Image (cartoon, helix red, strand yellow):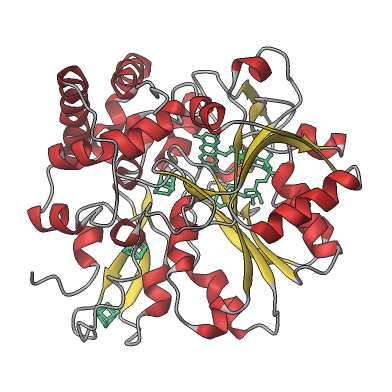
Length: 433
Ligand SMILES: Cc1cc2nc3c(=O)[nH]c(=O)nc-3n(C[C@H](O)[C@H](O)[C@H](O)COP(=O)(O)OP(=O)(O)OC[C@H]3O[C@@H](n4cnc5c(N)ncnc54)[C@H](O)[C@@H]3O)c2cc1C
Ligand code: SF4
Ligand code: SF4
Ligand code: SF4
């Protein structure tokens, strides 16, 4: 097959925007750019510089993802290998209240840093200059870790921060990222980077939101982009609130409202195409993965915040024990069944529906051959599910063809409601396998 470099991934709009190819290319032939039509980052190859060495192809997450059994603990195709599962939260009430879910990640990062397990942490914060953008940075103090607390539903690329890490004199760092970031980082072979990464901490991810969603929010709330001071996607309890702050207004809506993750931010119009075809919910190569505890036993009563935690690394397990003994975390063991149930739509979409979605996606046939080649899927799909996915993908193809910017002016609430209903087609049940 005559695929020379990752340009084909980018041209198919399936680039996750991780940025890793641009730092590993020995010819410096790859640049990351913002795609204005679709509101995501994508890679661009300078074909004159490219020597077709194939390194970028062997580092690109959608081409390397694998849920194979690595013989490290228990195994399940939905999550890969794992040692233990917990529900829990930070015992620092302020962190628990203001973090995305239960403040587990922030508390773990502070502990790792303050107890010299690491000398730096890579995490992500929103830009203060233009809060629509979020970027990863290296934190070296508790204060800086707190600045990166919370979820950013926004594309985040890791090329710049990893260049900084490569040149830095740090020796042990922890990195927090989405499954596509963790897979990309795990693919790096440059010892100046990979030797420094001690722990990979992953956020379970159903989907992300493109930049255009925020332009749209500005429009419907009648806010001026130039006056924007901050965007907070989560926080203030659980599931929390989204807050948009300008110099003269504060808009605060519940996380589950139609203005936030209930519709606009989770709409297929504002979901990057790469997320529709993503097959990694947990970061198969992470050391630990944290999610929301979307289980009835918690959603009915908990208004402060709680995580589910999938532990894959024995050293992390030891550290969590230390932290519970020191009354920094509250942890209860949970079953795999409950972990999967809490985010069943995410798991079903990625490990069951993704191959079908790719099949119906109007895209270069060559890409269909190289995607997901190392993945095992739950193939137990019935006819009704196939029809549902076919209808869903008809609309995704329509959005791809027309371009979000071009349908933007017609994007009013009734159309978004239509897309919200369309999202129901992706709903599936985890059958306890
Ligand atoms: C795009 C996205 C999709 C998600 N989808 C789901 C889902 O479907 N189901 C579910 O249960 N949970 C999902 N989560 C995870 C959930 O929102 C929490 O992030 C997670 O439970 C950790 O909670 P916490 O309280 O421990 O986090 P905190 O203590 O607040 O720490 C969060 C950490 O994540 C980092 N971070 C935030 N956003 C990003 C980003 N975009 N890229 C890289 N790093 C980032 C922050 O810098 C911080 O270090 C998603 C999160 C994101 C950002
Ligand atoms: S094939 Fe090699 S030279 Fe070409 S863009 Fe990829 S990494 Fe760079
Ligand atoms: S997904 Fe990452 S590695 Fe693959 S093309 Fe996009 S930026 Fe490059
Ligand atoms: S759904 Fe996949 S590709 Fe999209 S942000 Fe999440 S991990 Fe990355």
